[in-house]
Amino acid sequence: MCATCGCSTHSHDGDGAAHDHEHRRESGAGPRLIELERDVLARNDHLAAHNRAWLTSRGVLAVNLMSSPGAGKTTLLEATIAHLAGKAALAVIEGDQATTHDADRIRAAGARAIQINTDRTCHLDAAMVERALDQLDPEAGSLLVIENVGNLVCPALFDLGEHIRVVVASVTEGDDKPAKYPHMFRAADVLMFNKIDLLPYVPFDIARCRELARQVNPRLRILEMSALSGDGIPEWCAWLLARAEAVRSQSPGQPATAA
Figure (spheres, one colour):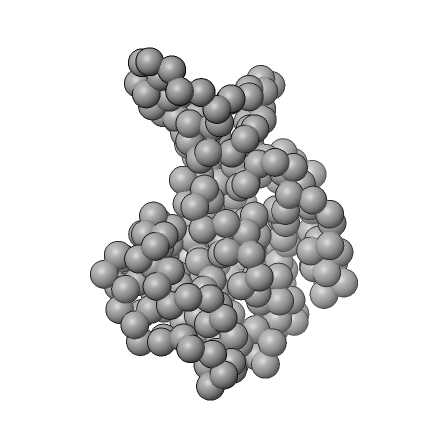
């Protein structure tokens, strides 16, 4: 079992080495597992810093999009791509354990995409993103969205080199998620309530969820939208474009706006 997140098997091969962790309860294993976790995260953070520096040098805003499965991340991306058409170039790195279904949807929506299949691993890491960037090569001054594997635990631990972390919470889920998964909400910059068109039909207390999220992370920016109906998409895209402009301003030679 991985000391970092509990996955049955990991292959963090940014340095070309794969390692498996078995379920073991040995005397003295605790400190060894803690040391292993620190090593894994330290190596990941080093690669993430490299990814972020490379993206910033090209004026590319990178967003790490996280949620539990079925919260609507891919539908949100489809709506975002449609709204940003002609305003900004957007590319996507898709993370799933299997299939290319989501990458196929993103390409059909009109954006470039590359799929990462993680098999038994429950999150993306910086080494995976580094390899995807080599293949995707997002254009200078553009936007990059990394749709992480659906999971409210492990993705919070792994910096991918992003500039912004967004957690999507569907109103079809429990409104106590910020209290149950505090690390995810604490690590996020933005909390997005999705599927708000369903609020009249589901027992979701959005005020309670907002309060719990603020208790965990007072600095959270909170947005409300329905990716399916389009409610809130213009505001979300306007905010994204403003953040993209801030990143481009850090990259010498990049134009004020991206085509």
